[in-house]
Length: 506
Image 1 (cartoon, rainbow, N blue to C red):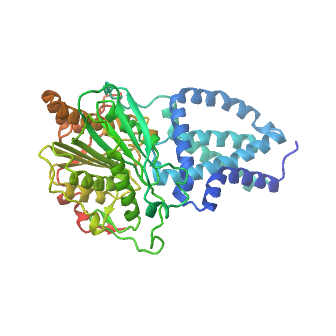
Image 2: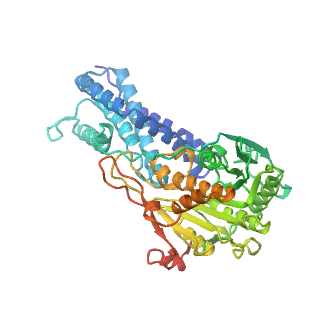
Image 3: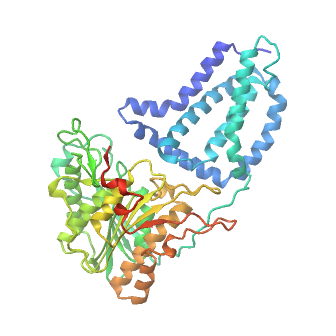
């Protein structure tokens, strides 16, 4: 049988391996950092994983059907089949490398079906390219090649095995949250705000296609007064689509919501020469200064957009990641206008640093009697240190509750609390229980405060203060409780986070 030479097989493998890495290599060559270069593949990993979750039984059945045919034909593959299989082996190893990097930085073992599926392709390709494994202890001129082939096949089987029980539907499933829908349809309009020249003149290329805007979401046919929510996005993710579920959960329950876009890619003086220092929930980034100017401009423009029946005396301010740090700037700006004087909720999700610069410090002395806050971290957050949130809670005072969303890898899909559970792209059961349930109660509390519905106010507030109801995260399908939320009234003075008193970064 005509078989490609070993040299050609190596070249074919390298071709497949290079092909799988082509996109991030090109993005790196264009000047992106490693996180930005891998981000498009991370998004596709999400899409593929959700597809595999929906079709896991069919994928498992297809594997069971195809594998016997491949085993039967393994030692009689044609040359073209070996060529294709060798390229697929290279692609599989490249994708496994990318997955390993993504798993280390973002995914944290949340996805079991993706590596399993890649390993299935790898196993089938190995059998087509190299035939069935042979006894490595039997004397042979190709003893090294046969041993190496056996090791690769064993490696593929090892990669497949953790996901087979999930594919076969043998693991308990997570609880579905029966969260009532909001009663209003939502209309969202984007309004480009005038970017100050001092900011636009130092913007980089990464966000050159972004039309920085205030996205105003208004519930339809609401004639009574509405509370206002202001939401800020995370670093390098100014896209409304990534936070649309958060915004619409609030707005569909009767709130006007302003989603504020601000530039991440700015190059102020000293941006390439400063020495980063992080302490007490703050950082000395020079980037804070132009971003704060842009946020202030967006907020001032937002004022001109609000309908007459929006009552900012009842206010929510929230943000995710870097946007949570900057939400404190939006909070200070709002308080300076007298907003939030009747009701105020602050929601800091996976928060990063606030600015250390003196003129960007926060005045917390004007909080109303009806004030609450959630400062929330995720157990497997690899992007932001927990101590930022700990210090933000201390800044906000004794009415701020510090919450950790736990990971629970008991069943399938695994419930892994990463930095991104607040994003629309990762909206799953864990996000419903650990995030959207709180968002709904926040909206209900502010709306009932605005409309004077005392009973609804009491009910909503009971879901926001520290209690067994707040901490409860449902049950797996076999009756085992999902790991509950963990809460602290004063995290900085707890034994768990005592190290944050002296922590400095990076």
